[in-house]
Length: 158
Image (cartoon, rainbow, N blue to C red):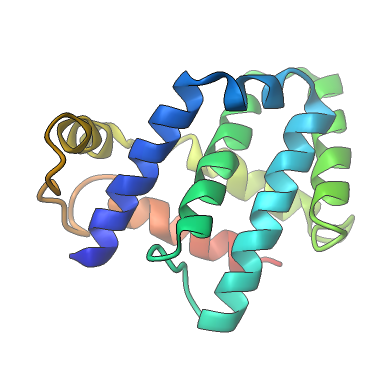
């Protein structure tokens, strides 16, 4: 249940951050968005590597999760030029953790994150933001297990 509270907190943090100007400039061009996403993936990967999982108790993980989701969303409907710039930024931002051998898999994993129905998570996050109490989410709640699964798959691809 604690993990679910942290997932909700991550989504809440993303909602708050994306409403601020902090993340708005990150998706203004592909290279900057890719670089930001790549550095966030590298940061979560280091935690994943040391703990063997997605550590949602770590505030750094939650912040970087928001950056990854923002980057993934910037790929939706992106032009070929944006995607090319994003890919270059992704590689450089990850300090070459992401490289020509694994970048296609990473891009695929990022795009899969945008296909997850997170409406139940979003509703629960809104409730959490409004009243400060943890909503009742379980791994059977639509979107929760899929999000954790997609992130784990992404980390294992590196």
